[in-house]
Image (tube, rainbow, N blue to C red; front, side, top):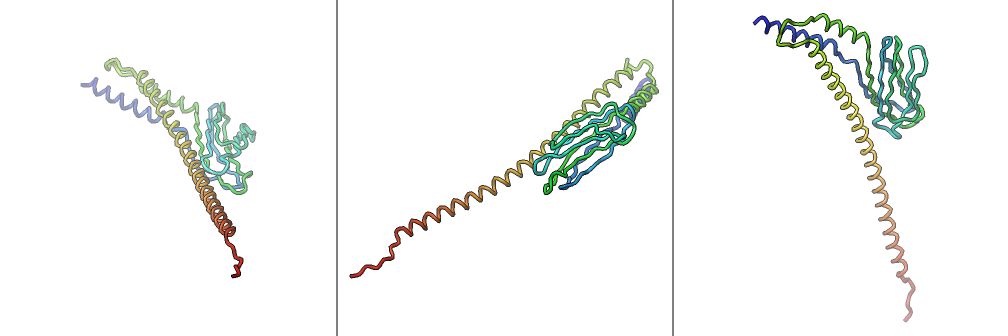
Length: 223
């Protein structure tokens, strides 16, 4: 009975340690970028970490923006012009605030809807997680369960779930962009279809009127 109770306590400690160790370190945001404007966001980073940035333009004429990433020292790490999407990795990072900018100044009339995601990897979090796992200890003869095996299994599950969540987020952004593009194309097709129909009706009425004028004889017949 004591072994079972010790096993339950150990598994509970493992779960609590896993929750603390695997705290989310990524963020996502969708915003509206007005015409002829520039928006910048700031992401704090630690020394010797990594930042992955993915962005997509999901609505707006042209579906493109200028994108740049500036280091805490003011150096341009990434500069892209008139792009609809992109993925960039900054590794290793410096301690400080990184500047992520989206520029729509080249477009005077069209606003853009932009989605981007920032994934931050900090080595200090990994070290803290290892210390928490080491402090849990290993149970005594609990059906040959080992904390290392449980740790590896939970880390694998966490990585796969996190990757699945990221992929679902990216797919939702692609779906939103495709839907907006389809709706825009539908409006254009409907508009020009109505214009063509009006032109055809005008041509038909003009032809009928012209033919009737050809057979309209207004000369008087004298008897």
